[in-house]
Image (tube, rainbow, N blue to C red; front, side, top):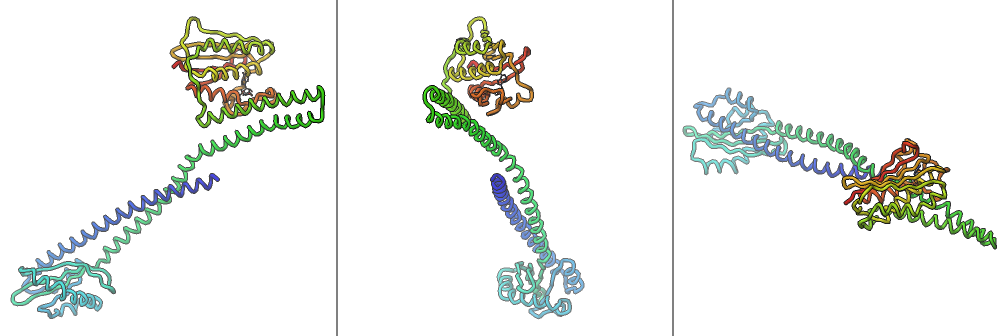
Length: 428
Ligand code: ADP
């Protein structure tokens, strides 16, 4: 599924970038071709100006000079003396060139020459234009007229645009090649970046799948127990039946706790974990926790101590119920993973608008290899050592609650053995 999405996104990004690249290249190409064409025409016009000026100065037309100029400038020259073709034309031009000039002279006679005659009072006049010969290609053409003595010399000058066309074709091919390479590079770059873009989505999806699998696994056990106890209860009676009902009740309570935990995590994930923020005296809160847990701690043959700062401390802006829930998780863990005869210490301190709450035990401790995963969902160090109602969700719920408060939760080894959890809460 993600492979397809990855490819689709790559194609989408490449397509969009390629479209921009192609549009920009075409615009550049259009402008550069237009410039090239204008320059080519201007340079042709300036060559014709020079050519006409030199021609005007000559009393007798030098064939040798004409031949050399035609070769140097790549011109095809044809001349008419009072509308009679010069023998130069027949001698110097090929059959194709003669055909071509006869095409142009027809047009020149009809359109250009009348214009030159009407418009020009000078002894020499010329006009340049583009000539598209169906059979011989594209040309720039110039028709010039020089009045000399009693006669008139008419010339047709043609410059083949073959080299210009070749230059344009080469430029277009270079652009095409560059665009193909560019699109190829864009494809690989897009593939790489969309891959990077999708990584967190894929990871989130994998985490969600793992979460659902683990949640289903945890839900299955109590449901199976409830089902079998219910069917056994139907067949039993008296105290036996009573025992089955007790099992159903206990497992249902566990299911209820588990679903509450799952709902809380779901709310935290979707940013819907609403806190009921109020001013809370944390020392009183710790004492309340002490009172609630003392009997359980005693039952486990452990001791519970509370250490509070001397003097008065400011109130903390937090959700009393949720902070109580976090402390319950930590104390209940300390009881479960503590040792008989061990101690649990709750300590509150305050400095520079920060509250620190420490929950310390001298129990089995947490190995370094497990520490990075201890806040992961459904993570239990040793499942066989965990009690049935421990789903591996306590610490991640504590983390979500504390982080929603803008605080942090960390752990360290207790130098006397066991674990020390630190909660940081901001005073404001
Ligand atoms: P659980 O509901 O299983 O206790 P938690 O998320 O609260 O889940 O804890 C995750 C795991 O971290 C526990 O299974 C346990 O192995 C370990 N752990 C948590 N607190 C302590 C502690 N105080 N001492 C030793 N191990 C602990």
